[in-house]
Amino acid sequence: WTLGNEWIDHEIEKIRAKVGGGKVICGLSGGVDSTVSAVITQRAVGSQLHCIFVDHGMLRKDEGRQVMETYRSLNLNVHFVDASERFLTALAGVTEPERKRKIIGELFIRVFEEEARRLGGSDWLLQGTIYPDVVESGHGGGGVIKSHHNVGGLPDDMKMGLLEPLRDLFKDEVRRVGKVLGIAPHFLGRHPFPGPGLAVRCLGELKKERLDILREADAIFIEETRKAGLYDSIWQAFCALLPVRSVGVVGDVRTYGETIALRAVSSLDAMTAEWVHLPYELLDTVSRRICNEVPQVNRVVLDVTSKPPATIEWE
Ligand code: XMP
Image 1 (tube, helix red, strand yellow):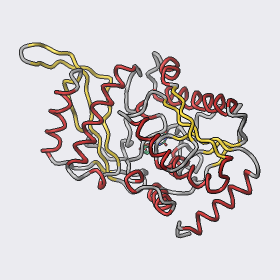
Image 2 (image 1 turned 180 degrees about the vertical axis):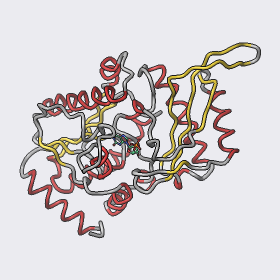
Image 3 (image 1 turned 120 degrees about the vertical axis):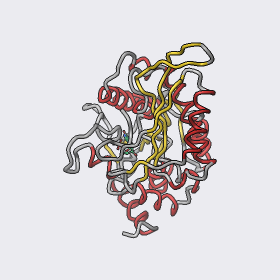
Image 4 (image 1 turned 60 degrees about the vertical axis):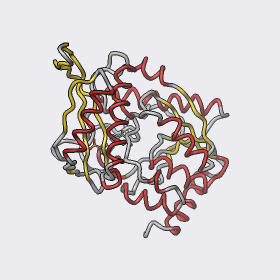
């Protein structure tokens, strides 16, 4: 397949054949994968598709508002659910990464099911799973590295069938399909963002205050990367908040502050990745701005590890 209109038409036919007159629920994450899945499916089944955008409290700064605007402009039928307090309550005291993923994955489906019921029931759950998710969850022959939000973590008693139209595609292929579908280049060019959101980038306990620190730092890093004209040439750039505090000094006052790690990688498909040699001036600006504008942070470090042996995300 060339992943043009022919591939799309074929997928549309497959979805129609599977779904028939049934109803489809789609959980939108704000990312490219779920958006492309939703636009294809809407072409296939029209108003039988209901999208749900759950704010799980682990979105980036201002992300909920921006993403809802994009969905409205794509004419997707989206129901917004603010479940942030519910997620944070369920995650209180949890620090183990796989446990976080499991809790988030299960609660996500519960929220969908509740919303689906509220909308009069649904037969199918549409997910934006792509090929690397399948492989890394151990469903494609690889070992279980981590239970990806889209693949693992589904409760055993889930009532709906699963639709995954992008299951065989790599990220760049998803973007190509999105372009043919007429989705704005700016949106398609956004870096990948994991389903569990900042939960996988906030090590240790997930408290609102810590997530807010991460949101502010991350927004600064991304803004400066864009300003430097580097955003589009990087596969993924983000901040992680480490579960480590250290001593610092401001004026003659001792501080005991948080640590932010900067991560930027280049990659073709997320299976392997190289750390990006960001210019020192950019790193300097970002470090100064984060420490000045996010007073809880007194240390900024740079991750210079490729994948393997590291993964792209910190968890
Ligand atoms: P890692 O950290 O395993 O990540 O090198 C590979 C790529 O997958 C993204 N990622 C996820 N995407 N749901 C997703 O949709 C997830 O649970 C998830 N975990 C990681 C990650 O951002 C990177 O692009």
